[in-house]
Image: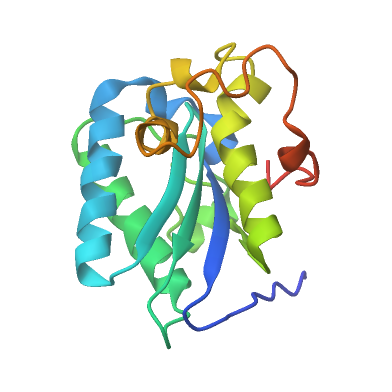
Length: 186
């Protein structure tokens, strides 16, 4: 059995990837996008953290969080968020993917893939690489030709704050800064 180990840095900044079970396109439907946003805000109110960046695609999401000083408990946040989203999604008539007997025995639902992918941002360059990778991700997957065309992204906030030009990442291939990020859990 694999031995999963996480790197906990109190007050650290982390890049995460979460995928839906069997890559189901749950977030191609607006009510599910809204529901996830609601659950995200509730999670933040229970256990504060800063969302530095986020992109939501039909079957997965990437986000960068900074935790408060002395706090490294991102696993509790993700467990609650996934559980709460799943409960509300299914109550609203959402469809879950088939699960194995083993998963049924462990009360796993067919909404999210088990676990999540985490990377600790080690320095400014590492943060910037993951920040750019995240915002360029809808282009990588062929959903749009330019990051500004994707609606479910913090890219728009960062354009408004002057961090990105509106046409950043358009028609130039993967930005050099994002090239150092291998697959980011995808």
